[in-house]
Amino acid sequence: MKKFYEHSEVSAVLEEFTDKENGPLPDQSHPRYAGLGRCWGWKGPLNNCGYPTIPVVGRSLLAHRISFSNHNGGIPYKMCVLHQCDNRSCTNPEHLHTGTHADNMRESAERRNGLAPKPKKSKNEYMRKYMQEYRKKKKANNQPLTNHPKSV
Image 1 (cartoon, rainbow, N blue to C red):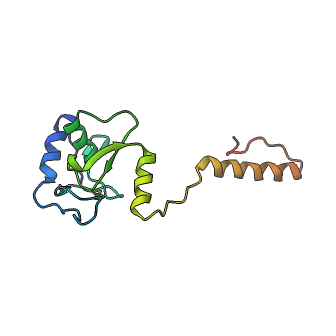
Image 2: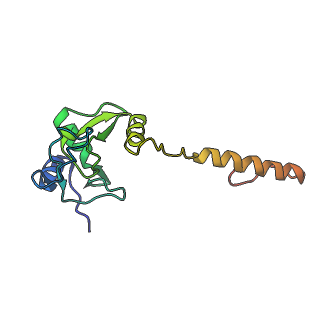
Image 3: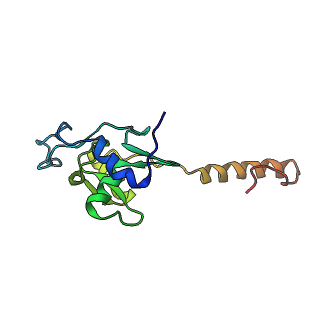
């Protein structure tokens, strides 16, 4: 069973679960990682994507965001906290920087030798296509378009 913490305890929990001495050292031969110190390991829970979390009543906070905020005075509005070391479980604030979601996707594509992710269709695009087909069928059968549960 998860233990939930109060907001006032979050920084203490971050320190409790952080392993500053035994984390992995990024590959120093790669120019991207040159000069980076050791990652701070995480001994606490991870979410489904491998990011460290701190369970707080009602939700889970991402530990790398808390670490960055504690050491840098906050996170600008609508900004992501990105890992320079490419280690999702790292909470070392020296390895973290802010950027937009687009920056994160660009850096991710650069790390994978330019293999950019395929853009995903949003749910709205699927719904729009579904409704166009639905309307065509109804129009072909001369049926009214009312009382459909997914009408937009």
